[in-house]
Image 1 (tube, rainbow, N blue to C red):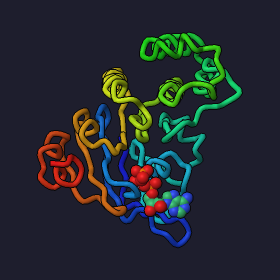
Image 2: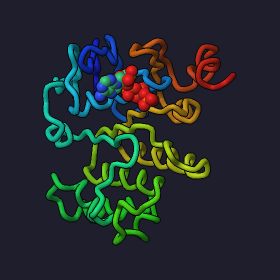
Image 3: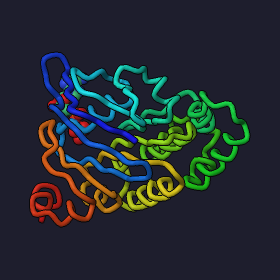
Image 4: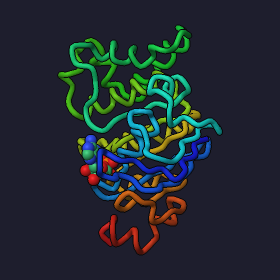
Length: 234
Ligand code: ATP
């Protein structure tokens, strides 16, 4: 479904990722793990068209998309939930969710998806009239995910979904990610919480200083000595 080949990205003179290749098959959950600054966010931003690579290809269903606009990429079914609180302040929770569906015309489908999102995140229904800027960090995280789902993505890119969440909510959000995946959304996830990210992943890639250094199934990576030492404190 997604094929990233020999991707290199620079910010000015700084090389953030170097010659990275990986793939995501339809139906999978794939996790990219790595320390701060390894290049995880840069990879997602490049896939979703927010940054242009210096070299390399991003193919989506065998079509090159690395030169397409972010809007076009959303239209084709890739939705990105960025790190942190990127909700629209001055707009209600419901208006934020509706914004996620701005490229859709199927009113019935939109209604169904809104209901589904309220089932995943009941707090969003309770707060639907509240200004999104006044939600707590964790609630904003849920809203950002809900808004991305409103575009009915085929591929969901999640940047650190556990960030800023209280420990009791972290498992909950990952349960929802699994649920979303079962309902036909492929997931590419980046996380600093390597344990939970590998537990739910079909496959994973380990990044160090902008390069892929290890790959395997979630289980294999969890059991690997190098991953244990570097990321799981074992
Ligand atoms: P974290 O887990 O800390 O969010 P990350 O793996 O997502 O890290 P990136 O945000 O992709 O890492 O950053 C990769 C490298 O690119 C880092 O060295 C970072 O300092 C650099 N970088 C990121 N954004 C910019 C920018 N706008 N200008 C210059 N350098 C940048």
